[in-house]
Length: 250
Image (cartoon, rainbow, N blue to C red; front, top):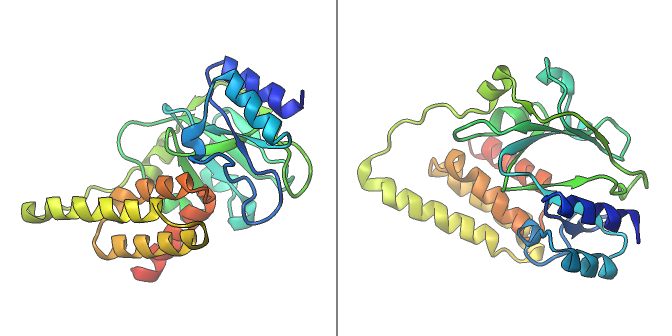
């Protein structure tokens, strides 16, 4: 039994569903290996054994628990923990890349959330039940080193960060257009969810640009990212496409 399979079974035994992700360097690194992405995460030990029998070196993907969020600090994109301080001790996963990248788990605040301001700080927001993370002891595809836990209780998100991810109040839209906007947003999400592998980044960018033009991006950006991730597109790249569309179109 590999360390990854052993850990995957232990996560599942504690009620945290898991699924296999690509361990190889390259454009699909860390992407789900199962058809429906993190939606195929399971606690069934037989399915888990079958998955890791097929892909013995697979990384362990685990959906963010629905009552939590994750702040993904990636120095390669300008992410810096100092920009978020002060921070309480909380459950943390340190990347095996060895460059200081890490995931911070917090209790999910009530209400809608937005990553707009976090993206400007080089930080990705991963929302419970809508995204996933790679968890220990998965080995980083580039460095060959495992990621590791820094074990603390999952903390409450500090007030200054709650304010940072709470979207501003939206101006009321004309009642006559509300149903049209909803239909347009649903169509854009479906467009991203149905994107073929070779067009995933292009289709997401196109849909995000249309959403900006229609004043819909704040309300559907989480759905766009979730739809993109469900096709196997890396979540961090999806959020960067969203941010690029926002910059390009506004």
